[in-house]
Length: 255
Image 1 (tube, rainbow, N blue to C red):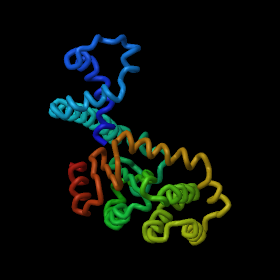
Image 2 (cartoon, helix red, strand yellow):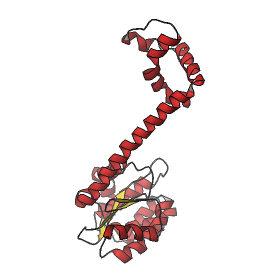
Image 3 (tube, helix red, strand yellow):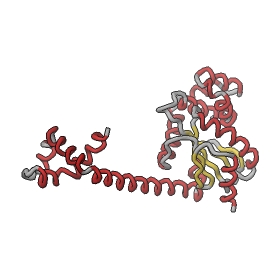
Image 4 (cartoon, rainbow, N blue to C red):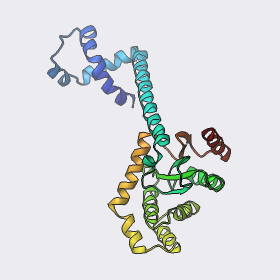
């Protein structure tokens, strides 16, 4: 693993100095250099690294710190946008609560995520208490690498949104998270009185895929790697936090 991670670093940072100072060889032309990086050369480079590991470790640490700083700047720019232009962030996503959008809570969630299901219980209470002053916005972030039903559930919920039943469908999915699958998606649609032909057409449409892809792209611009994630007027709240945590952030925003 470490060899794989270091390979590009070795090639770009050490090639010239090792050819000159360690091996006593002539400096090859730039075209020939890549062709001469063979197994013998690589083994010699790795030997030098084993003798001086602190050089590479320090370089990697500097690189990681720089990348983290860039990611934090990108995240802050998106969070600032949530506060300055909430309608631009909301787009066509499902909303509930206050219509004014003075205080906007954006949530990124995955219907198969157990932490999201836990947060859903807390959120229901928070919404009941503040639906007159807070606009709640749902964004899809299905973690498809670990949750095989996250994406199909998101498509089904998006289809329900087209018939004005997103939040009812959303609640039903979380309340029956252990049953996620095709049978449940149809069962909920029927119980909510959805037009099944339209429902099936919508959830299998390119429009549904594009809408979810846009949410995922927004999550990536925030550097999100997990769910749930919340933000109130740009104030981030990662993870399945307590009701008191939600209340504390809201109080800061209102003040």
